[in-house]
Length: 78
Ligand code: SF4
Image (cartoon, rainbow, N blue to C red):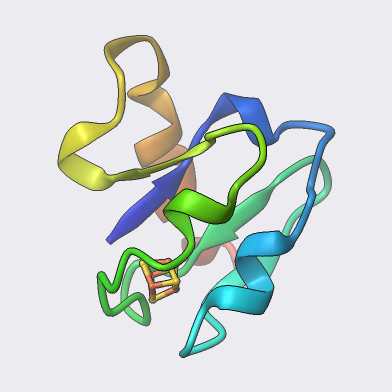
């Protein structure tokens, strides 16, 4: 799955939502989240993010690793 990290917080540009072919990007209070079971790893969202907040799960920068867990947890709570 792809993961959305800190740069999205309070930005929520949503360009990614328009690109996603399976509509698996959801809106939270302060940022967007990618549903890990629905994402097909196409990568279409990554280059359109104006703040470069989106990373393939294995490539999330060290300082934003917590966002990987937060992404999974967002959907566990629904
Ligand atoms: Fe959607 Fe593709 Fe991005 Fe996954 S990688 S969130 S399927 S656009």
